[in-house]
Image (cartoon, rainbow, N blue to C red):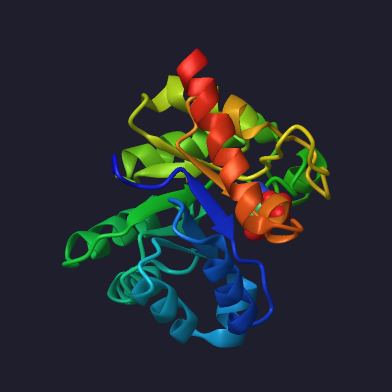
Length: 237
Ligand code: C5P
């Protein structure tokens, strides 16, 4: 855990060639990569194997949500690819979450198991439309507690929710946070953002960063500058 990189670069590319070109351009700095539904659906497990063979920790962001037996089998298949982190929807319920945990516990290589709570694209009216009358914040905490009780290693949450999650589950329960923007970067379509240093100061463990790195004129310099900002802040903190 201690050696795990803090920054997870979101490889939101349509082809494996483009994703791998970025990884080569980023050089040797410590970072993990995130392979999501677009890249995985286009390239399949071969891009994951390529990245793992290249020595990069891979977060396979496929957000499994199905009956317990199917999710358990999918988790085992992901573990067999040698990935570092996987995720499942916490709203899949306790039986599904426990099945995912139990499946990974039988694997020789055990990726971190992270729960997705409430997608940041869902606001109160969207939740109400699917029958949930609690606020998004209440629902995030309910699903966080459930994820913890079912033995998951952490949750995906927005930077604003890190403190609440840590308060509820303790510092050792991991947070994975998108919505990270260096002070000078464009917000793109993200609304609730934090700078890399402030997310780490709030106790954030892993920061998912896409466009501020992948669309930078010099991606390697952008990554280095983020790592330097975090380090400098920790020294002054
Ligand atoms: O480019 P950007 O830094 O906004 O990329 C963030 C990454 O995190 C994307 O891959 C996006 O799909 C993902 N993500 C997110 N918000 C969530 C969950 C995942 O931005 N709530």
